[in-house]
Image 1: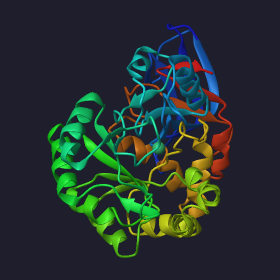
Image 2: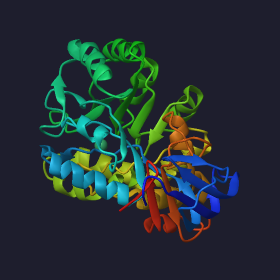
Image 3: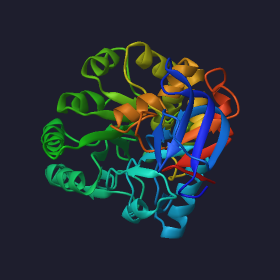
Length: 362
Ligand SMILES: [Zn+2]
């Protein structure tokens, strides 16, 4: 499509779960519901969603740490072609700022680099520091990122042989206050329950994975509006991790298996209690990019309705991250499907057309 041309999409425009329109146009890269006076019009039909959101996705990272720009580009293109047009990068060791200048790549909301306790995370990923330095590092990453900071809240403690909290409560409180002062929100990687009370008391905004949520903690998360991004496609790998660590760390292995076994119940209980749940795939560590449709299907398996799971990857996630949906004048980031994703979310796996910044891509 030339820049001068107009894209006309008709069928079912899913502006919100209940707000459905018959058509929209893309003019100069933006959405309009008013028919423009134009000759050069291309019409596409189908079901339209705002560009999907992957709220936990690492561009610029692989299993060994930072990757080069060519690899980062490939990752971002894979996400884009799967319909993910907005990424909340949950920590990256690479500087991906150059992607902002690329009109053909998804938009990224960065969290800077992961902040972890010394030798308590995957090698080459994080700033590895001690608690006394936490507030200063959090403030620095808040300034580097796009409104989020990523902590590693718990990890295996090899001496204990089990998952253990990484930070004392007072360091967390000071660090999270520093991020909030800088206008950034803070999220933390947490598998077990142990780290959650201190993070909650310190004012955490979101928890990644959140497999350790308990009956006691769930109402507290709900009351404070702390969101979770379960990354169920990642949690599916826990049994394999547990098998690998069985010999050296049997207690850790058993713990990981328990968290895995109750993963759907945990997400369902959190969702039922009113905790905001969002779609994240954790692509870029050991997982492939482009798994957004699978994660939406996993949330349905956990008990969210199709419309709720779609919202966790589109309408709701965009509102949470402060980005437009399909509103008049919004940037035209949208995905067209051949069938109704509300009837069956598996439709997301096969987009008919992906439109980014008003241009058909892929
Ligand atoms: Zn991650």
